[in-house]
Amino acid sequence: MTAPILVAGATGYLGRFIVAELHRRGHRVRAVVRDRDRAVSPGPWEAPGLEGLVDEWIVGDVTDPGVTPGIAAGADAVISTLGVTRQRADPWDIDYRANLAILRSAESHGARCFCFVNVIGGEQCPARLTRAKTAFARELASSSIPSQTINPPGYFSDMIQILRMARRGRVLATFCADRLVSGREGTWDVGGPELFTWQGLAECAFHALGRPATVTTVPSAALTPLTRVVGLVSPRRADALRFAAWSMLHDCVGEPIGTHRLLEFYKRHAADMD
Image (tube, rainbow, N blue to C red):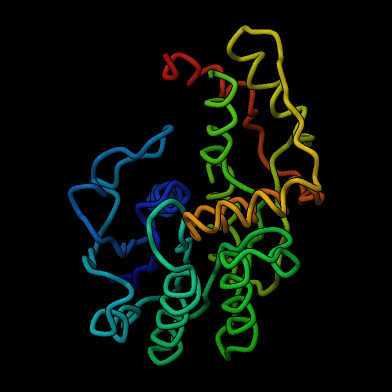
């Protein structure tokens, strides 16, 4: 029987597409999930449910030291999209420590390679989220296991926030699967087929809604004190704001891949905003 590919973060937006892509290619998939019922149901914004796509289930919390030691036993390779998004968790517990525990399991059980989805510019961004990801990426680069690190600027699901504001990884999955299956080591900065400014993203969202674009600009000098004020109430939200502010002030451009267009995605979901 063919050894499975372990997918950590399988119920996230990108993780679901990766599971579907690996299944489509005929690979056996071992998915790590906290809630199987949630995993088999479709995810938001066109992300597929995992019913019928997973050959082996590991149901548990990746921060539990009783779960991770044997998580990669018998696995051919590992791909991790694991990371904090909107859940109330410390990025160092998930993006760094949990990924590191899975890496140690992969090393001890002789997995062929380990693919990690990071973020463009993470080594320069001051947010805790990106510092944790960068720390793990360094651990992965120094590991004895062959590795691939994929750095996207974001996912289509992230862009929904702009559509919501205007209203008041499908192709990335393929790219990750290609690199994982090939076993080729390296780091890749990747993006979609289009290049946007933040102004352009907002205009795209208004276009999808059939409304004239109305964009308010916040002076960059106001972002730091605003982040500090938010931090007094919610450190987690302040860190998300710090990440967003850094992204808005720096170019996050990767190699163009795929054919899916943001405007088409927005138009399909504009009605969901009603």
